Each structure stands twice: as structure tokens, then as C-alpha cells.
Length: 527
Ligand SMILES: Cc1cc(=O)oc2cc(O[C@@H]3O[C@H](C(=O)O)[C@@H](O)[C@H](O)[C@H]3O)ccc12
Image: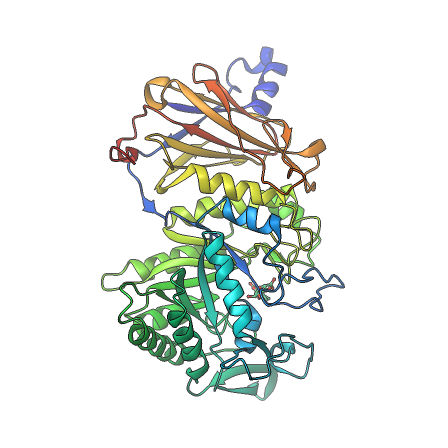
């Protein structure tokens, strides 16, 4: 037995009842890690989004977007640049609801107003806005200078007619459906792609089509057949435009909420698709008062969430399907997240679990809504000071390699453990999330399996306040230096002859540099 977890609470109970129960209550929880990887992520699995919401976007009386839209974000801000460079390359997905209301300037003489105006009489409640060529150049400069990769969301509603129909069943009015029908007018997108190739923007890793237009309908429904035809058109365009470029970016669609029937038909009709992407908001609404409980009890791992991941994995795993699965956008709570939750330590119970779980189900990339903007930004809106999840994302990126190892815990429900081959050594990295507020988790690591040493990265909230925006690493507050430099994330080295202890309500990355028994994690010499 290489790996064991003791629940302190149970042992305390046992000691206090020792004369009655003897050793019967001294329950040992066993954790097993399979030696052979069960899935593989992209090397840069951690991705973040930049959305388009204007400062006037509000939910529940809270307007958390400021100037975080990629149309007006200060791309020269030192903190943002430093935060992004730490990942180089960070995959950045540009898009969101309003991407299907965005037009691209085709000549510098053309008027181009970059403001989305609120108007509830219009589709998606906002006017159109324009992405100027100058701004597109600035965005590409930013991507290049920060060593990032871009995935850009194209407007898939252009040219389509939006129809609103009443639903009547058995003579009863049940509400309305909004669908977009007709052919996609790709001319404006074609221009942007051609322009990008002419300018030599090689860091564009993928072009994605539409935001939440298919799948489980939220606002506007598009049939799987129409969506597949549009994706096919995009593929043809990209192939033609990039024919002399050597590499071709990925074609990514539909960026919707998963629905088994819809996705099955869409993927069946899209043999050329590279990435089938879906969005997930499995904490519920940003206006929900019960989010704290949902996070601590991990009840976001409900049947619906699991069936979405498993459903898509099954579809893409079928022989003959080329597409792989990505989470193209996940912010926890929809409608901009929740202040005091999405931007605080407690949100890590969702974010780190989702990074772990999605990887296990062979998701190649996980895009966090957002890099900045809304309440769920990795960086605070306006100040760009990193929220606790920023540091979790960075530790994941640095420590968790692409090969995913399956873990199994027997005997406890309050601890979640994920394991990957290590990013930079022949060993492995494990991530332990202790959802128990009373008890530490104690783990023994058998040196004959896990090597003699380990490096611990223990994340705890400041003042034990789960809703703190400040986080400590190994007991030291993480903060920017006065010039906006991201702090070093240094581990504490420990001997594996001593037990590992993960405090109540905390997270720990543990790097086991080896030598370990995980031969699949050994890197070729020189890597
Ligand atoms: C009602 C709803 C349910 C759901 O599961 O997802 C979802 C997503 C929505 O839009 C996307 O999510 C973000 C958000 O609501 O916070 C937006 O900022 C983003 O641009 C959208 O892509 C809306 C509603 C729902």
C-alpha cells in the first residue's frame, strides 16, 4: 500500500471513544494512483478568456466588467502583461455572448464604433459594435509580446435571420423560441482571417464559430445541421487562406452548452472539425445565495455535469471522429459570477476540481472565464491584482504535466485527489483538495514508490477566511511587488519518511520528483 489518507476527525472520535470502540473507529482511507496514464491534455491545458461585455453590463445590480472587454482593455498594463507572460504560452480565447454582434472593420477609412450599447429591443440585448483594424493589430501585438496563443471567436450570426416563434402545445401557449436560420454570411470573417494571414499573425491557434448558439438553447437556437454547414464553410475558408502557410489553425465549434442529441448530430455532420468545444456553468447562477455550500460540498459534481463530460467524451472517442474535446468557457456561476465567491479563495474548490476532472475525461484545454472581467476573473477587474485562482492556475500550469493518472480514494467523501505526470521531472504531481473544515488529511508516501523527497505547495486563505481575495503559499502571503511582478511560487521541501498533512479547507500541490514507480512519466533524455 503506497498511499494512505487518515481523516483526523475520525481518529479524534476514535480516541475519545477509545475504551468503547478500541481500534474499530480508526478508519484508514486508501488512495491508489494507476501507473498508466488514462488521458492526455494539451501541454498548455490552462486557458483563459477575454470577453466583450461593456462597462454597462450588469447582473443583479452589480456591474463587474469595467474596461475588461478585449475592445477596450489596457493591453499595455504591466500587471496583465506580467501575469500572462508567466504562462508563456497562455492560450487566450477571445469571445463570449457578444461575439455574434461584433463586426470587423475592413478598411481604415470605414467608421468603426467599438461600443456595445444596451438595448433590450435588440438581439442579445445589445447593439452591434466594431473591431477596428488598429485594435486587432494591438491585440496581436499583445499576444506576440506576451508569448501567448489566441483562439478567436467569429460572429456566426452574420447573415442569418433570427425568428421568434410562440410554442403552442395542446392549445396552450408555452413561451417563445428564438432561432437563427439561413446561411452564414462569412465575408466579414473571411476578411479578418485573410488580413491576419497577410500580417503574419502566426500565434492564432484556432478560429471558433459562434457562442452558445447550438446545444442546449440559452438565447438563440441554431440547428446542428446549419451549424455543421457553417463549420464546414469555415474549414474550407481557412484551408484556402492558409494553403501556403505551412500550418493551419484549428477549426473549433460550437462553443455551446452540451446537449447529447444536438452534439451527436453536429459532430456526425462535421468530420473535419478539429475541436468540439463546450461551455459549462455548473455552479448555477451568480445570483444564488447558496453558492458557498455548493462549493464546499462539491455538489457541482452532479449527474448533469458528469453526463455532459462523459457524453462528449463518448462522442469524440468514436472511431472516425477526428475532433477532440475542449471546455471553451467555464466560469463557475453564470451571469458574471458572484462577488465575494467567484473572486475569492473558496472558488478554488470548483476551479481546481474542474481542472482535475475535465483532464481525467480527456478534455484537452480548459478555458477559464475570464482572464479579467466579471466577478470570475483570474485578475480583478480594473486593478488586475491576481485573485487566488490565478495562483492555482499558475501552479497547475507549472506542475501538472499532460499525462493524466487516475486516482481512487476509498473511505472518504471530503477529499479530492488528482494526479498527473510531473511537468518538468520524471516524477508525478498530485493535487489534494481538502473539503473538510474540521480535519486535516494525513497521507503517507511510501519512498519505495514515490521517492525520498517531495515539494509541497500549500494554498490557504488569509485569516482562515474562505472568502478572502488573498491567498498564502506555504504560510506566506502572495502579492505583487511594487512594480507589478508576480511573486515566485516556491515549494517547501519535505522528506517522504514524514506524513503529508493537508490542513482543513485547503489545497496542496505535491511534486514528487522521483525516482518513482511511474515509468510512463519518464521523459526522454534532455527534455
Ligand atoms: C442561463 C445560463 C446557463 C448556463 O449554463 O450558461 C449560461 C451562459 C451564459 O453566457 C455565457 O456565460 C457568461 C455568463 O453568463 O457569465 C457570459 O459572460 C459569456 O459571455 C457567455 O458566453 C448565459 C447564461 C447561461
